[in-house]
Length: 341
Image 1 (cartoon, helix red, strand yellow):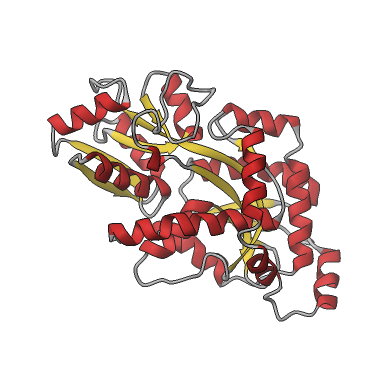
Image 2 (cartoon, one colour):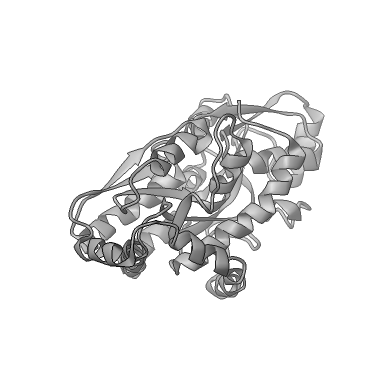
């Protein structure tokens, strides 16, 4: 599977819990609602459908995973869990919708940790705090990125691709969803390798995939959930993964570490958040039901098949992951100086 194995992930989670113990507790108690009121609200929750806002296009890795877990979670909660795609603005359109919603657990955000912290660093005209303005609920799964090129490109490894890009400056296009982790990792890749590859922004990464199939894009970084079927069909060629170790789904594809680019190693975590002030009792109910949902053998098999590692965990675990990503990516984004158009 793409990403870390279970043992390594468990050790990582334990380490990360210490990063944000105080911040998490504050985030879960930010509401001015009394405990008694929150407890009463939680007892009847949910009594109507729950909307999950995805700040990504349909068909994206985030969308795929959310739609896998939604029906299982809906069955456990006894209410519909409706997916609402709100792409655009480097995910800020969807973020605004959740931030301004009533903090009652009926409007949730589903996103991934790197993008959640990157967007506030590169967006123009919109500021938010990825920790204080949202309440982490639960991590659902993780995956790593895959770097792919068209099958017609005469490069079969990371080093061959770098050599080809250097020999053909200005002729290759890199496609990405604006303000996402692939955007940042792609820019970091170009800087680290000294390659002249044009950056082509899209509202969502799925559009870049379509354009690679159409011959207009020659480099994409995305999660295996999107790319594995196309790689298996020979429509795209994988040349590197960002996981610390090779993927069991792509055992012949080297890691960025093996290719001499260890700084590009990264694992993406996906999960649910609520708006600041969501009652702690509601957060606890959602956390419990998602964790129980992830015990489903069918759901786990579906996630693993497309390269997702089921995770789960406490709100504190998820908060620590967000804090770590902010610590990692903030200085890199600021040093690069890039902003969303």
